Amino acid sequence: MTSYKHSIIIAIDGPAGSGKSTTARLVAERLGFIYVDTGAMYRAVTLAWLRVGKPDIDVFLSNLPDISLSRDPQTHRQMTLLDGVDVTDQIRTSEVTKQVSYISSLKTVREKMVSLQRNIGSDHNVVMDGRDIGTAVFPKADLKVFMIADIQKRASRRLEEMKNKSKHHVPSLDELIQQMKERDTYDSSREIDPLKMADDAMLLDTSELTIEDQATIIIEKAKPIIIKHSHGA
Ligand code: DC
Image (tube, rainbow, N blue to C red; front, side):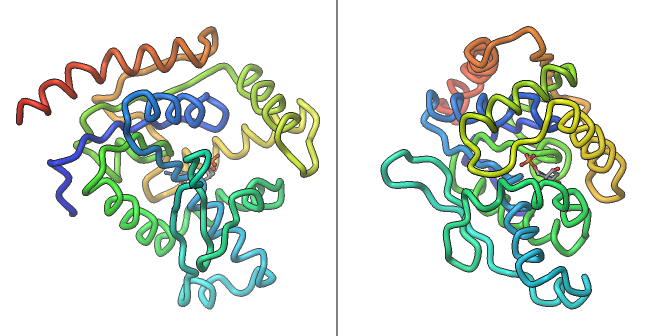
């Protein structure tokens, strides 16, 4: 495994809609760390598979597309590139969301994405969000947070987000709850690196918290770690 002792890793895992990405982005911004949304990487692989017409999976796996991350020069937000082309918006369609659990359960896909994620964390302080960051990608992360929230809350938050941002079809609340439950079940029961809380993670139930509350809790936990790190520990 890549050594990452010179950088600080904050791992934030949890199910869809638990508030991970917004919180992780804010924490990273305030700490001056790089924010990495690993779900976007699995979404980009899924988009590639859909674009080539869902071919036989072994054929697809034998020649996986090139996935990389970049930063928008103006907003500094993560940009997701598929074979060098920006697909940040295209990976958010419901078509991709429906298939991403399947594609991300495949060993070859996971091995490639995990290796990219470890590379990013090897020389940058990062806040990385996903499903298996604290259990599989960085089992020795400096701080691990596992975020959960009530399904109704998660779905209504996601719906608001979609209404505000999405140029694509927006499902109903009930449809979204159903889709989220299916995705949680698939992601938690897959064989390789399922969605699971690490034994040493802090559990954060965000049902009644604001993004600001969540970011503050994580930053307070991170502060002593950063101080210790700056003293060379
Ligand atoms: O965070 P998201 O909803 O964009 O993630 C999309 C899917 O990618 C999620 O349903 C499971 C998969 N995923 C994963 O398997 N491991 C990660 N570290 C991140 C996401």
